[in-house]
Image (cartoon, rainbow, N blue to C red):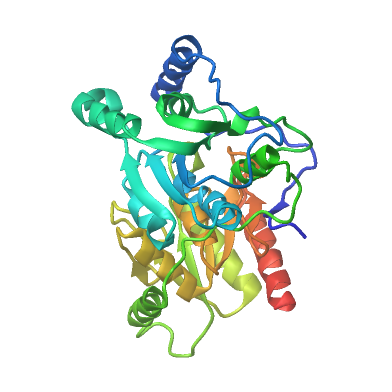
Length: 368
């Protein structure tokens, strides 16, 4: 069975759904797309199917200039694949968010992690400095890892490389491909090895010391709340924009879920605003460090939230991860992994969503 998330939904024919990040972001993407079409010349080093050599690739640049935690984590399967295909290579990364340094810390193959500001036009000196640094190096391979990303296309076109691979150069075949799998499949396509084995899982590569710290933090948080040693479930009741579910929805969901799965100790993961969205009735945990949060979630063992970056962080651990999906497309964004699931909640009924989540968790328990 391929390591893709399962999908539970209320209907068999769902309309196509796309992320909603606001009108300003939409216009920025349109401007960047226009620049990419009109100012970037067609590259002469672009590789097609089977045209990338399997040896002689030592220096690699991966371009994914996106500030979102989830999109950063979706690159980890590509890094695992590069390790396997080119074990002696070094990979530089071009990102656009502060989380990249933390997320990729566990990968020995990562050399330099260059970061563009998410509002590059407002910080021209920093942007020019990063792009000059990019232009000063020579690579054997540059990978534009985000299909349809104009900023990624511009950055990869500026890099000096013998070979350039664009994820969107690979033909679309079959159903929608998960965003974690598509760069891996594109690399295999360029090597002439498409369809060769399962795509690697998301992996933040926690160390043993980090796992111990996560377990210690969980024990500290639950010191007076879990004397019976019940299974632990971490819930992050927050997300951005239209993906965010109301506080009342979450309270009804938690109550129904507990009624269906029995004794479980819930821990609420609190967002940066410090506000509880589960009514303050459960122990809480907050950290601004993605790796500390990942180790805490793994120690808990089960994680539930709407579609968000923390959901992908949980999927990059050994925790069973459940994502609740409304406006976004689970075919592209579901929590990646065998025991993980995307559960539809677009009908607005927390009780029905809890019923579907409970059914999935019970299946996972029976299989263990």
